[in-house]
Image (cartoon, rainbow, N blue to C red; front, side):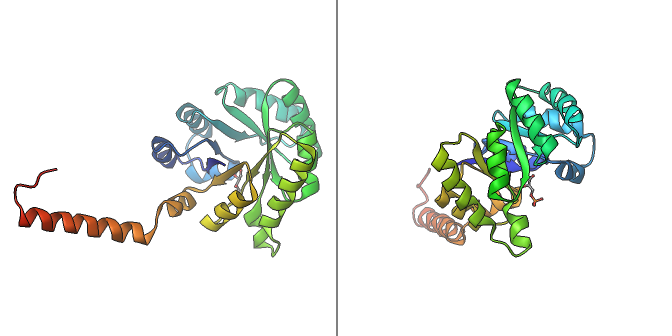
Amino acid sequence: MKIFLDTANLQSIRMYNDMGLLDGITTNPSLLAREGGDPQKTMEEIVRIVKGDVSLEVVSTEYYGMLEEARKLKRYGSNVVIKVPMTPEGLRACKTLTSEGMAVNVTLVFSPNQAVLAAKAGAKYVSPFIGRLDDIGQDGMSLIAELRQIFSNYGFKTQILVASVRHPMHVVEAAKIGADVVTLPPDVLGKMLKHPLTDIGLKNFLADWEKLKQENPKVRF
Ligand code: E4P
């Protein structure tokens, strides 16, 4: 399973990229707005830092506007993936951009039918938003299970990119189902790293080492 970071925060991106954890990045207009500053510079910098796929979203809602924005975004780097919304115009743009050799991520997907249509339009990634489904009392993860089955039934090449992830158990469940990618807010990735027994274990190892040094001052590492 690939791990993407779902953020436009450069500090988090650099930190987790340096740990070798990131296969890519997803951004959206809200994430860029959260960081402030010049969004174009931020997007360029993200594309420069991360080697894997970086999804950058168009903000036009009509076909020609999407194509124009996509071609500009693509100039930031060969790893740019164009994110388009799950709308008729978005699917039409997906088809055109794909036939021009661009990779497309269809975002704001909330049903199996939408995901099938995105795959048919040639998307490299389809992004079901599981947390937002959970928020309205639907089971987001069951959508991932349905998509895994449907895509496997027909050998669709489109990758299931689990989005709107809220907590580490979402990641475990998505991995058990066999999702291709999870995109994680930095705080969720931070929580995945941590376990109280790791902290207690390390503290005890270091305390025992200190004790050993005191009993035998010649001990060196
Ligand atoms: C995915 O590409 C989106 O950026 C993201 O996962 C949206 O998540 P949210 O529901 O937390 O805004």
